[in-house]
Amino acid sequence: MSFQIPRGTQDILPGEVEKWQFVENTARDLCNRYQYKEIRTPIFEHTELFARGVGESTDIVQKEMYTFLDRKGRSITLRPEGTASTVRSFVEKKLYANPSQPTKLYYIGPMFRYERPQTGRFRQFVQFGVEALGSNDPAIDAEVISLAMNLYQTLGLKSLKLVINSLGDAESRKAHREALIAHFEPRIEEFCSDCQTRLKQNPLRILDCKKDRDHELMETAPSILEFLNDDSKKYFQKVQDYLGANGISFEVDPGLVRGLDYYNHTAFEIMSNAEGFGAITTLCGGGRYNGLAQDIGGPETPGIGFALSIERLLAALEAEKIELPITSSIDCYVVTMGDQAKDRAVSLLYEMRNAGLIAEKDYEDKKMKAQFKSADRHQAKYVAVLGDDELERNVIAVKNMETGTQEEVSIEEVISYLTSKL
Image (cartoon, rainbow, N blue to C red):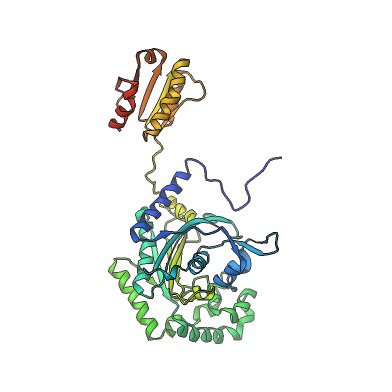
């Protein structure tokens, strides 16, 4: 019987995984500069957390979650996104009591959604996200957006488009909600069943419908920007001012609606305009969610964050033909001739690695010529040749593979010799 990988998942093999490591390390370094600290939450949570935190009317909760009963009959869900878990931990561990606020967190890890697999979109995918909890300052909104843009630009992406919108405060959203219901209700039977359900649950979600996006009522739907009160307008203008001060270009799109129920005030998406990237251009999305901590049993806490798929980021890099500066070379390859030399090479290799050198040797009993070919495949900077004759004289021949020069050094000094050269 042969086994195959489940649909919508992938094996990331050596040669490819180094790209992931580079991107993830770049994200970690950037978060450190912005003073966001890593949080690691469980891969599964109680289903109710996502139902309340993500929103009952969302496609994620209604159609895409991997949910099962554990042995005691409790409903458990593999996490479909990272924000709800992060805020749950923030509340449960009372991070809001720390004297220094806001609490700035980031995460990198696998998420799970049952959706149709396509280029850059999988059922198990890796998400990087940040959350800033505890501040109502529009400057933190601009900081979060700037961090996301900074990551893409640091990795070399140029075909980027930042789109922002305001969903307003509770008062503004209530007025907009009533206007949306009045707009869609007379002809709601012309829309899909999902939209008919959303009309009373969360009519804003109708604007995000993929099936009915070409319906004429979508074009004439009232814009949230028409219903922003003075406080919401001032807040949104401040965010724009800060982005402008950071030299970050953006477009205001009144039609931008994030797919999760907990958003208010600032919402944003970053898209790729790269040729050949695909029909789905969104790379990253996020926004402010001032009521989420309260919804899951915590104190009233403002928050803002974003999440992005590492898979889609790598796909964007490929679309723009950007080569990451990844090297697979090693410092030294030890070539041996003779049984005694082969035995001595085992401990020599161990000593090299303990000294911080990236080193390798042959384990297939190859001839000397084949060992040199193996050294080439490893892109070895130096090759150390040890035969029984050299072992008897307590020396080892070290060859610089770039220049072709070779010299003998004592076995005891070979590590310090290589270290000084490298």
